[in-house]
Length: 465
Ligand code: PEP
Ligand code: MN
Image (tube, rainbow, N blue to C red):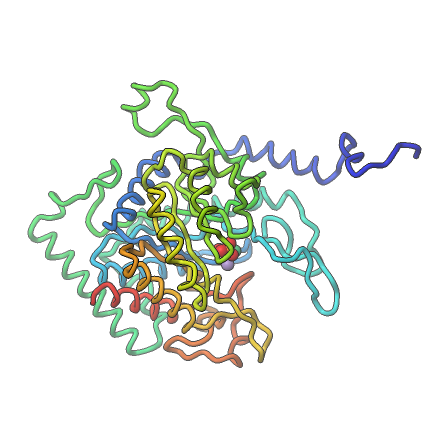
């Protein structure tokens, strides 16, 4: 071949995997949205405005990474059940409505610190999530068709979540349906029973005095029924090709607005209600922030120790120039040892800028460690509690308020009904030697059922006192 080589001389030539990628993306562009502008803007963003105004609390939780294989009836039911149980405990303590956003129905892609890893002495490409490559070390070549599978697995998951919600499973009137069989600790069980009985009594009382008829709450334009819950989906907006293919130019939900302003269409990411930008991809001049600034959905921004205060404000100026309420959720994840060093300055800078934000604590991602005994990636419950407690205290000291938590947890059980063993400590006092027993995560270690309820009671009691 006589053609001159240059780093870009491949451009313009047929490229096998990329043409497969464009076929997949063209297909995705024709498939229906997973969520609607009305759910995204009218309901979720309205509810997030109430979170920002301290009239509701946000629970953002689920797997670090979903996997195609774990898309089963049992797993989805367990996830929703745990999110509901957690939120029930919070409602009881905080006496506030809870806005629930799951890391579910699309949370496949994972950012990695390194492009390769060593497995059994062999250097292989890193696993980047089920929508990119396979977890098996023998099959790490990225395959664009996985994006299409991700769409269909997201759809299946969301379909089942919607069915669960509309068939009464999620009703606060029947909390026993979700969880009690999983709670082994007698103390935890008794505490949960006390809360759910208390809530059932309160709902009964409201019904008796007629609050259901009068007290139906205006839920962002939708009439709600006492005891029924809303649930939203989210994932990290990492795979921009995928996000772009599911970004649609759609009319605003309000018919009044539509009549008044016929041009009132906007771009919505229709793959999830809420997407967030990760701590590794939030560069001000990078592709991800460029994408995020154009969509109408409420968004999250992960904020770690490397975020400078002025950078944070410039980022807010880019993604929320109109300073809309309920639009941006800052998910802080510094680590228990660093939260007091960074959070106060971030709170002060945001306050001074006048930007409206929702403050959420992610006490998971700054507290990841490797077990010296077994080599597993893990997190200690006490560090998670420490970062969360410090976050609550720092907000209070700074005359601010923590508006929510972002957690990686799972209600998954094995066939014998035992929960996963990925994080250390908690009331079950999991120790390092026990990590290999049921270590099932595809990515980061998650709190199991009991550890999650421990944390729920801790936050709930904080608000009660
Ligand atoms: C995550 O939420 O799983 C994640 C990778 O977070 P961060 O971007 O904060 O590291
Ligand atoms: Mn994670």
